[in-house]
Image (cartoon, rainbow, N blue to C red; front, side, top):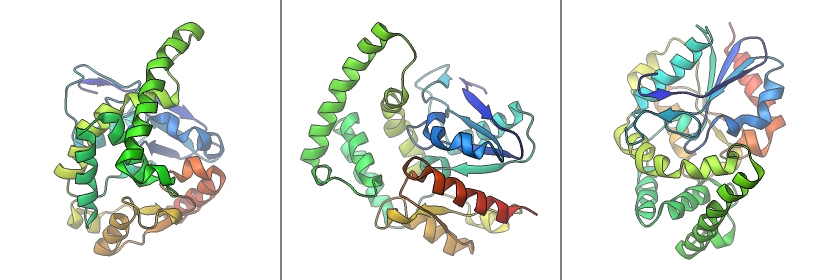
Length: 262
């Protein structure tokens, strides 16, 4: 793709299923569900541009929602796929609206005080059961300090042992881009075209985790479904059910996709 070289993965046979990772994440987010899904589908995943192994020609380049959408189409084209199921998680299925706009602005204010503190605040907002110590700015500050210390040690350990950065190291390494580039682009600048969604010729639906009640990520999906007349589906677990309850996630996703089949 122009300006970026995208890292992609593919497994299995059958109808294509593209898995789009969320903010700060990469293809590794779906590691627990790729094998079971690949028994039914050709599972394709990738690192979104600027994250992990998908390097930008210029790291300072901003990225729009439309550009991310073009990348998803290009990934499918790379594998010769003309039709595919698509599942996007979190920023991979960008939805904005409702009073959660204030929560996004709050997260941006926290991130201005430190990227790691912003990452911890984001994690606390999306956890189905947030530990008590992460319910306050003091807890975010303490956890951010521990993460910074860990991030300083990890490269040293890796140089001694060899190998590529692991999933958590990649995730934390994407923090700056997630909070300084992607969050403003998806939370402030992007607005879904409701008329186009109502006219969509392909079947689709928003979905949330059952344990996400009261969280930033839940209400916009349900409001969007009501506005365009599409049922909002429910997955077991919280914000990342493919990691929390992978077997149940695979069953639920397969049922939803089977319902879309002609």
